Image (cartoon, rainbow, N blue to C red; front, side, top):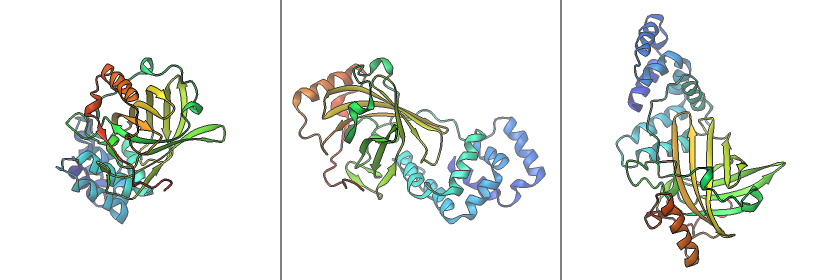
Length: 290
């Protein structure tokens, strides 16, 4: 599909704006043709600008290069976040595609495993989880055709819940890659955080290429001040994506008491997850404050 879309993006700089061509595309789009036609019909100016912009076109070529790879979803995400993020031309194209429904319909990445009824009801304020957390074990590790993105296995995932004015942010840093081996420079995102109900943190992003992007972090276990388990569900105009992880105040799970691990194992099993099959991350060599 990406190859088809880029082909139409190239057309957008030449014949895609010709009235007869647009009429043909419009007829095809009414008959539920593919998203590439939608782009040429509704986003010709934005696609043409992207092809002419070196960084934007490099992003598209990077995403095409991911096609057929075992980690295709993760590869494309890294292209978007390293090359596309912050490029106004690329982001204009994504916004146009979102506004006109040009993204292909795809199944969710992973399963939303938790709801408000599964959260720790005693946690009623973000202040109760403030500070620094490292991801040390994850659910979405690109292990099969259900969990494709590998978001929970990105190296060096460091979450910091910090007060900003009258509200809260989650200052998050991470890298591309998996299995504790970075493949990119450090990436940064800083969503705004609220707690609409006990144990549920809502993250709203304003610094990602494709908006709106919302994640719901369900705190399903917090047996001590040093560890908690979160199952999260996210959405943006292109995809619903999901996962879950164990967070630690330290960089690894090595010092986790056995009784806490057993509690996580029990809670994970109640939500359909094999705790011992979750992927493990060692953040020992990660930067503290990149």
